[in-house]
Image 1 (cartoon, helix red, strand yellow):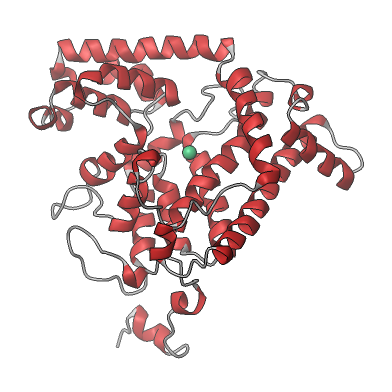
Image 2 (cartoon, helix red, strand yellow):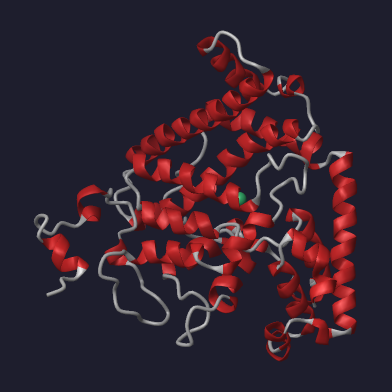
Length: 375
Ligand code: MG
């Protein structure tokens, strides 16, 4: 007789809910999920949020992140981060926060993998172009686009459109669209991914910028947070090569920020008597950098904006790529028959301009550079 996985594991010990034993009362328990739009039977050994994570990871949109710009694209040596490696870094940092604060790590995984899924090719410059092209129809926003992808474009089964993710994952992504317009705070799992995103890009963008030659490591010493992290590294190690030092400082920056977030969030949870998801929603934003980090982090971000994201070399390249994307749009709008068939069939529902942008947003950087040959 063949035993099922559930029957087999039942013989290993008494049935226990890992979440009931481990999660804090303010965490989002899987058993309290609002479920999926299209009801599905539970999986025998994976939680609803584990299934969400896996559905995202098995999607075509996820794999395309491997060739989508984070900040840099097509640089020699391919050292720099892509959207995919960035998302994985965000997942591991968010998971560290979640584990320390006894949050739902499975939910955090799904949210982290989803958070940048809607990015078009060429990073924020691609997004700006699509947003401009769609001004008359509500604009383009990568956070909202991630929801369109998982609710409409991805195809798993004929039973429903999209991936049929749980309400908490969809609401968590929706909370990223416009933070200022929300009356309630999002779940702490959502706040973890938001905080992890910031920890990760503030650590890896300086590292990548030096590697691709936009910055010298000495220039980073102008920034208080980097200088302090470098001093901490120097106190631990006698002498490091510049490249080793740079990586060690990037790692120190992550460790320092994550430690600060864990301690600060735990303190705010205690101070505000947060003991349920309901009280998380009513509390102030709980997962935020403490006073030691907040201001110098702002200084680092201003430095990155002025010296990296607005570097003349990067701006020149971005302008060329934006022009190319706009040309693709104009070309396809004159001859929509060149769109791949599945996208053509969406024109009647979404309109031509939105459909063209949905198609262009789905492309990788390489796909956008060559799509006139494929279409
Ligand atoms: Mg991100």
